[in-house]
Image (cartoon, rainbow, N blue to C red; front, top):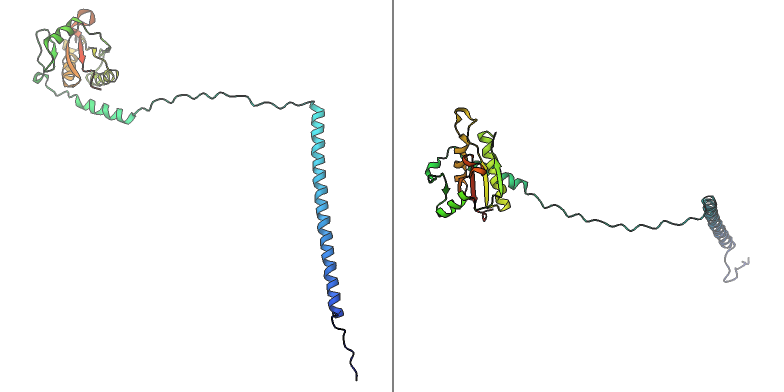
Amino acid sequence: MSRVGRAPGRKPAASRVESLADLGLMRRALRERERQAAEAARRAAEEEAAKQRERDLFVRSVGPVIPLTRPVRLVHHRPRPAPVPRQRLLDDARVLRESLSDEFDPATLIDTDEQLAWGRPGVGPEVLRKLRRGVWVVQGHLDLHGHTRVEARLALVAFLQEAGSQGWRCVRVVHGKGLGSPGREPVLKHKVRSWLVQRQEVLAFALARGDDGGAGALIVLLDSARR
């Protein structure tokens, strides 16, 4: 029985059918992608056309539009205030308050003359005479009338601290004559003298002249170099 042989180089019929089927699928997939791309392009064109219609309608409604130019703004740079060392000032004030003792005996340091003037060692009598005559201009003034002893001490500390920061050379401290005190005793007069002697920046003091307060005030000479 003879066999019919296949011609060399020819594929089986089943393989040819599968290849044609794959080719058809590829063609349909390409056509679907082309359709989707065309649909997306159509929608984009419709959206752009709708936006253009809206722009045209706006222009027809409001007329020609001129874009606003951005104004030139001048920025003011405000200088920042100098920092205030609050805690250091509080600490200094506390130390100063504690440095003035009400228990201090001024007799151990005060060496006054017959006119109740005092000078720290090294301050000559000519300085005291100038103080009494009012040679130096009074640059600051503190009035302690109506203060209690505690209030007066704190006020004097703050005043001397301010005098130091300002570089004042000569100040006046009014302590009063004590006429309104119980027993007419000039309590603040003695206390102020005691407190002033304890302050290192105080070089000398003397009773004020009559027009500056007389026996109710002191003219105080300060060491302006101590800040």
